[in-house]
Amino acid sequence: MINHTPQNQELSLLAAIFTVCLCVLFGANAVAIKISLSGLGVFTTAGLRFSMASATIFLWARITGRSFKIKSGQLRQLLIISMVFTVQLSLFYLGLSKTNASRGTLMVNLQPFFTLFLAHYFIPGDRMTQRKTWGIMLGFAGVIFVFLEKKGIAADFKVGDLIIITAAILWSCSAVYTKRIIHAFKPFHMVLYPMIFSAPLFFFEGFVWDEAMIAHVDAKVLCALLYQGLVTASFCFVAWLTLLQKYGAVALHSFIFFMPISGVLLGGLILGEPITINILIALLLIVSGILLVNFRQKRQIPPFPIGRNV
Image (cartoon, rainbow, N blue to C red; front, side, top):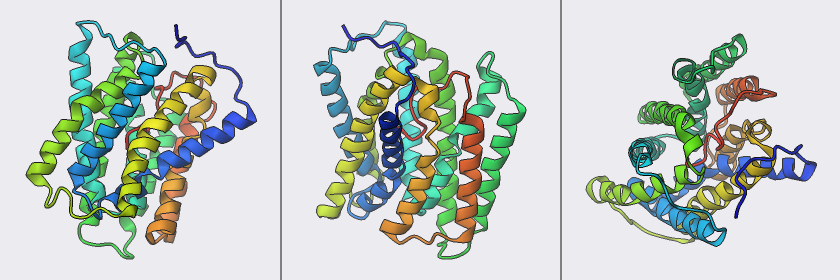
């Protein structure tokens, strides 16, 4: 029988390095999405990614002896999570198709700030503090600098940014709701079942709205798709859950500021996106806000990283 109770051991140097690597991999996912969108439809990409990821996580759960059973009362809760998951990921992929990976990474990393604000009203005992307030202010100050950026900005970029912010707000609603109910679930249930629910709906959206579900597939597009489905949505999830069980969420979330850093820098290095002074200031402010609200916080933190399915 698998023990799912976190042991909260002290994070070793090797585990800390591995956690940083996971955060970098999560942060690079927006870059992979942009590459795959060069040959695949927006919603088709999401459908393929989460089909692969759900199959992989299902096999992992079977091999490791995890239970798939849920109680009858939990079905409605999973349905709510799954519907929000489908809408938020649809919006994220649509928004990212209209903006840069670096800008999209910064926008989606507003999610923890929205979550803090909502948790104040909907999570008993999770109150706003001066530290959290300053963190939120830093995060949203970063957004101002993103919107001030003019270099290389197409007309659709700001529309894409706003769509991704909407996705981040939905993500926050889902995170708060998940935090209220997760004690009754195996943690992987909260990821696997929404993926299984959403995959066929993404394909339906692709059939209806994608200009071409599959325009062309080359090695670059295929590798980018495999990265999303097998690396971030599968391997990184399993690895994060494994570390979570051993070290606890507080220790792991001290490293999530690496996600926006890797997303912005890799967007510039791999995709050639402009990394301007405004983007760097925005990155500094958002990272500072994440650090402020997470570093050495002893409050309960949701068990998965903010970009777990981005």
